[in-house]
Amino acid sequence: GAVVSQHPSRVICKSGTSVKIECRSLDFQATTMFWYRQFPKKSLMLMATSNEGSKATYEQGVEKDKFLINHASLTLSTLTVTSAHPEDSSFYICSAMDGRSGNTIYFGEGSWLTVV
Amino acid sequence: AQTVTQSQPEMSVQEAETVTLSCTYDTSENNYYLFWYKQPPSRQMILVIRQEAYKQQNATENRFSVNFQKAAKSFSLKISDSQLGDTAMYFCALGAGGTSYGKLTFGQGTILTVHP
Image 1 (tube, rainbow over the protein chains, first blue to last red):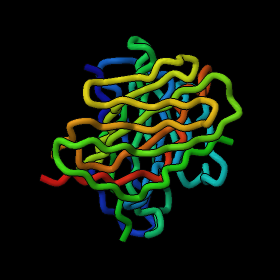
Image 2: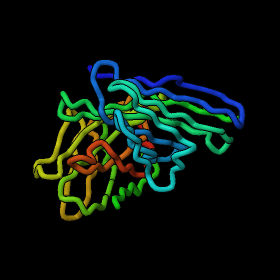
Image 3: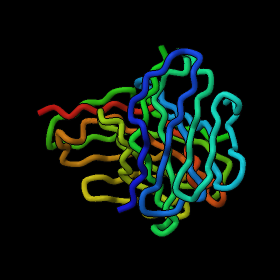
């Protein structure tokens, strides 16, 4: 079946540096992907909608200059956390829709970011 | 704005018994979808069941069924014959139809523990 893969699954970075997280749809094309953030034992909060070939749409309160999203191909969206700070430490998870199967939504495995 | 409320932070059930998780929502959309997702300790989001709002018939998937009360904006999940592998965090989610399909609003989650 369809799979959405995220990489890396875990990353530790120093405060002030940038880190990139990839979200790939492995066997289907995804013109739209979504990025969520989840704090421990909390809900998923939608950060932005990633649109292939155009700018991402950010939810209210999400800093677009801090969380850069690029969707350069039909199978890859990237989230770059720029100038990371400890408060950016969180679980980031992406999702993508497979239009072949009634718009089934598939989630990636998620990425743990720790900023030290 | 869409909201999803899960009023049960934690629930527990004995193996082989039945448990019901509650969810209420609010939306101004006429075309929308409701979901229950399971998130085990691995953090992978697993779709349990999906309900189209325009369908009156309650969705079922093996041991999982929903009670969809559209007028009351209620969407509860019933798990029958609970198994140890059902232990996880369960999220209720709401998504609009049309071009916004895929953008999900999640509830706060319910931690379900199945005891042997």
